[in-house]
Length: 260
Image (cartoon, rainbow, N blue to C red):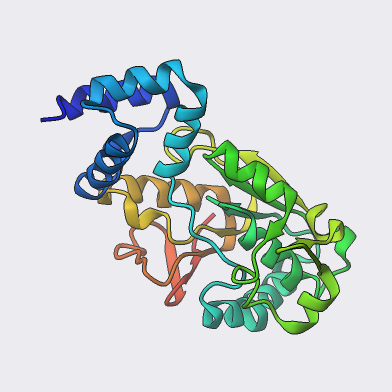
């Protein structure tokens, strides 16, 4: 037995402000138990002591906990909707001064993809995307903008040629694109949300949350959007009670805020 998981959750919250109660317990415990085994910790208490005393191990824990799987233009059909419908509709409705939030942005693939798509319609100096993640380590990686060949495989050829340069085994994204993204650390379960957003993109993260936590996050996303603003979620996610949460379902992964 590894010990009292409830006590472990309280200790983790005190250390990181990450509320493990908001995550599906069976999935999360399997991940955490594997990490304990990897670090030779015989109990939850021993592991808490380890990450309290060792900042590198604490960073490892947060990085392991926050599932960082990302790539440019992930789920290509959804990006086709962004290109052909969402962005043109936003420009028509809200004008050129758009406020876009990429929440739980991981290593930056998603917000940089958004900038490139917006560049089809706007000059780069008019584009600004705010990108947030709970994990400081991935935020730093995102700022560097270096990616593997696999990560950039889905990028349209014209953007790949224009904005990426091969350096050794990786590809460096242009500073022209990087400069249009403002990265911040943010905890979806704890921190204050942005306001007056025209689009929020949050994909493939809430699938790990409990139903109660999902509802709270979707409520806050709705409050963060202007009337008619768009929420873009992952293809594996659903908002079953979208009408009760003040959303209109535009397509599988796209929802718009109904009332102000």
